[in-house]
Length: 357
Ligand SMILES: Nc1nc2c(ncn2[C@@H]2O[C@H](COP(=O)(O)OP(=O)(O)OP(=O)(O)O)[C@@H](O)[C@H]2O)c(=O)[nH]1
Ligand SMILES: [Mg+2]
Image (cartoon, rainbow, N blue to C red):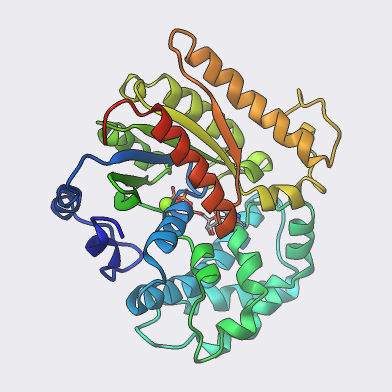
């Protein structure tokens, strides 16, 4: 177990991160300088999901208090997610059927934070299900979810019986699907192998959070840059006029060129591959990226296209330096997939890390 086990085992609310002084204590607790990896990328790309996976792999199950905090978050993800998502649908020209509009108001007006051990409110069980099954909502999903309803709604709404059971305790999969937009900087230390610790830093990716990135750059050995591959047909939550993939390409370019990251290895994770594979069957990349020449509905061609776009940017940014481009396709909610991907990431970083850690 890593030198910093105490920090990660301490139960915390999902919305909390360690205070600066606690983080420093945690880092100083390691008796040698760890390999430092920053998780960067747009909001919703999957950074915190990877952070949770690493925590699970290295420290085992979530504590009772952590699980309880996630249970409450899942409730909010469903009620707020459904309401906010459907409201966004309206601005994209979609809406729920007339007979379900009243239900939407009910879910919006009566939703509230659960107290500790308070079960999910059963009076919402059926309104949520009816809203989810609304033909217009389902049609919008079936056409590639262009309005951008949170992807985790699809997972949670398929499990409503289990979630609304009074004795519901979230599984690891439930916790991996929960989402809260990170504000602040979360750090955790893991033991890679004897004599090698890894300090993983998870930073929020929404626009207002990105200015914090450079303040974490000091001593970073690697940047793991995450992209939501399935975001090619959606706009940003914080800016309806900007396509998520265009934003990720811009952000990648800025990050590759940032002088404060010039000594770091860059590894790109094109994530949400599971969602991408489903979506590509219904939503043609060419409709959003007119220079895409591959066939519609072909996931391999789509992956190649986006990988090439990111590689071209990296090559141009790295011309003057001897830096490589590394890329993996991932599904952050799949523990086995992330074990393998993170093992590859760690191998790359350790192989290129010049300083003794
Ligand atoms: N199906 C699926 N869902 C994913 C995947 N990666 C992340 N998610 C979900 O996407 C949502 C956002 O993931 P997070 O890891 O919280 O995103 P983030 O990059 O930390 O976002 P910010 O903290 O806002 O910057 C969560 O509901 C995750 O469960 C994936 O590969 N597949
Ligand atoms: Mg996050």
